[in-house]
Amino acid sequence: MTKLSYRQLLFTYCIDGTGNSSNIEKVRQHYLYLVENLDLKFSGLLDQLYADDVVDVHEMDDIQVQQTSSRQNEKLLCILSRKSVEQFQIFVQALDKSGQSHIRNTLENRQGLLDLLLHSISGDIALLYCLKALC
Image 1 (cartoon, rainbow, N blue to C red):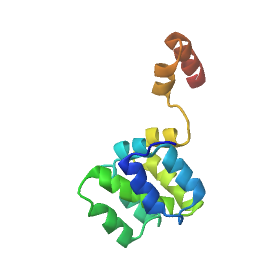
Image 2: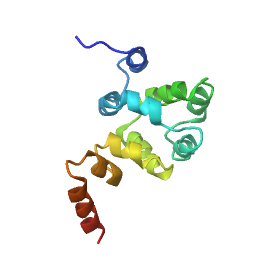
Image 3: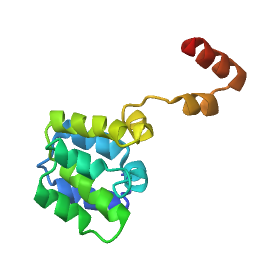
């Protein structure tokens, strides 16, 4: 049996069988990473989600009233888990618009250029591959 952290238990309680299974699975796979790395305060992500009609004014207020950025991220993830697949995809696109494409890459299991270089067995081969792709 897998031991869940307090945050993961909170998310499980939050969704309580009402979320979209596709969204829940993506969030669950990367939950701690998302809680620790999403930037709602300076990136404009929350404003973008409001403009794109992913969150409404009440949800936005519920997120902003949270005391810490981690709690704000947890609340956003809870809300997103209950949205449609289309709205979740708009969230993923909004990550790019708000300068958080590294988070999008993680969600979609895509590696960025830096990740490719850092995780490659041979940095030289990866660099040549990247340079070839750019030419």
